[in-house]
Length: 210
Ligand code: GRF
Image (cartoon, rainbow, N blue to C red):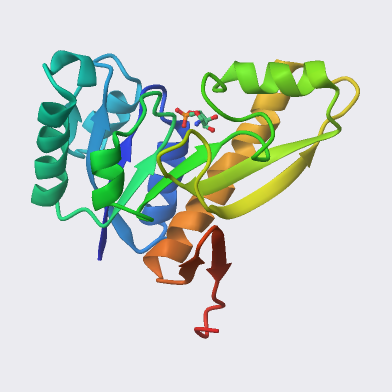
């Protein structure tokens, strides 16, 4: 069974959707640890309700990045984590952790990368930028995490039309409901070992292994 670590900084609605899909038997995985840099993250309430282990680990509380990395890496090791899922995690993952978990860290971005991504592009800022730019299409991107912001190999994308009367808030709602479905799909594919990676390209095998 795949052990998943979820890193989050906020409310955790993606996490809740993933958990529901695990409960339904759609995703063959277990959430073995939740890590947040914020002690007041909403996701901790869900973790408490559901009896899932969680830890508040804030990189700024460590004297060096190395100390922070060894704390996180030993926790991940203890929990035999096979996949790290970033769900609204606002801190950059240090390269030491990326190297150890290469192509085993996923992130979701609420736009179609490489548009409207990169450092500082998170939350409502993304939807504001999409509306201000006048883009007709936005969407959802799930990708593996590499050393650059919003840059690693793309696993799944789904477009969403921008309507004339869409505000950033309306768009955020539409995008979030698609995120919940697409993120679970990507984790399911990973758990079933149906993703293969060649450079930047991620191939999805069908359920017959082809
Ligand atoms: C989502 O919009 C996700 O795309 C972004 O952060 C938000 C997290 O929302 N990376 P939630 O905490 O899962 O509700």
